[in-house]
Every structure is written in structure tokens, then in C-alpha cells.
Length: 298
Image (tube, rainbow, N blue to C red; front, side, top):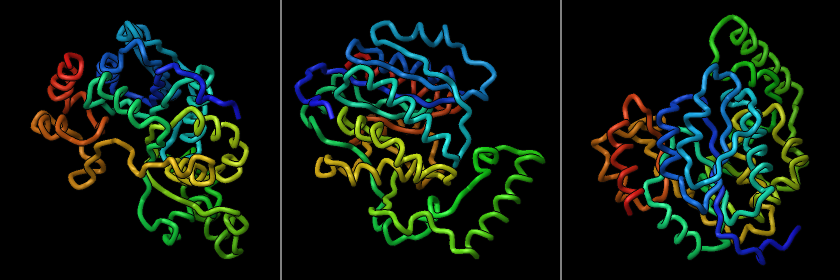
């Protein structure tokens, strides 16, 4: 592994996964538009229209890159491969930190605040872990069995996804009866948490260097984007640098997750986090405009 500690770039990479909400995405880019940032965006291949040129104009100081588009379906391993693609593209240039966010997220602190925070906590890996997950076999089931049709099922509707769902249920029934268990000989434990992260260059490189092992574990998996980072971070040389915190403000009490509105402005800007999710341009326009004005005038 390269000794990246000698590099002093003070650059951050934002890795954005999106498929809609493009007016919000433009505002998100404006909030991240800082000369110390590079922005890498993946737009779901299933999305028929995206105003690429208009969105690109939102970045006046940051460098913006559109990565090769792939079809992403909920719960499938396609989500993992897109995350790995974004990491591979971004690590071609050294960055102090890599932040994975969705196109429905937004920073709730200014770029000066965010850069100062990570400069003061240099080397720490911000990854959230669910408590006692090792003892919860249902999470291990996500990689214990093969979910051959999940990339075709996702949240899709219609006869083909319904047929694929039935075939997958039949396949799982057979696997359980024949005691299929991909985790039986694993030399490490499975951990779970949110898939959103802020990690260093060294850990990003470790993930890329272990892509074959990640693929072996997560191919034909179910929602393993919430497992692979936590699991491989815990077997990395950087496990002692992990802080159990994604730095994302997410409200699971009022929604799945809750969509913030203007009434939540004070709650958001006073939260002890750096980013928040989620926002919807049809519901959250006013609060996003207020936050954008706040973070850009800090």
C-alpha cells in the first residue's frame, strides 16, 4: 500500500449516487462547490433524463466528474459495485477524505467547518455500526444465501419482477433445506451499519485492493451495501481509527427515513452532524434554500 500520509492535498472527494431529484442535486453541488473538493456523480442508467449540463454549471470552483452509468436496483449487489466504481475513480487523485452521499442528502455545515473538522480529526474513519449485529443472524442471511434475482426485483413492479420474486423465494427455500451457507468458512465476522461514510484515502485503497474478496462475499447478496464496508473496515489495518458515527443526521423515528421540511430548519442546523438526509425537492425546497444560504455565507 502506498504511504499516503506524506501527501498533503487537503482535498475531499464527494461520491454521489442519484437517480432523480435533480433540482435538489444542483443545490447540493452548489453547497459542495469549493476549490478543495472534487465531486463524482453516478446517475442510475434507468433514469431517462438528467440535465447533465445544467447540473455541471452548479460547480464553479469544485471539479465535477460524471462516472460511467450502471443500473442500480434496491437491495441488489449493483449498489456495491457503483460505490466501488466511485471509489476507484476518485482515488486516482489523492484525497484526505471520501464522503459517500445520496442525491437526496445535504450538508448542514459549511465547507470551512467540514474541512476544519476533518483536519482536526485527521486519520479517523467515520463509519456507523449497528449494535450487537454479530448476534443477529438475519443480517448474516443477507450474504449467507444467494439472491440471484435481486437486481431484477428491486422496487420494480410488473409481471417480470413478480416472477423473479417467486423464483428467488423458491431458490431460498431450496438453499435453506440443503444448508447452503456462504459464511460458514469466513475467517471474519459480519458487521452492519449505514452505507453512508466518510473515510480516508488509505481505507479507500484497502477496499479497492480487496475488491475480489468483497465480490466473493457480496455477489448475489441482499442489501449487503450495509455490510461490506463495516465488515472489511474491521479487518483492515485501520480498524483502531474507526469512529462509530456516520456524521449523518437521519431521523428514523418519523419516517423510513423522514423527509425534512422547513419546520425542521433549526433542528437541522443545530444538529451535531455534518450532513443530513433525506430531502425531496417537492417537500423540502424551502428548508434546503435556507440551509444553502446559511452554509454558503458562513
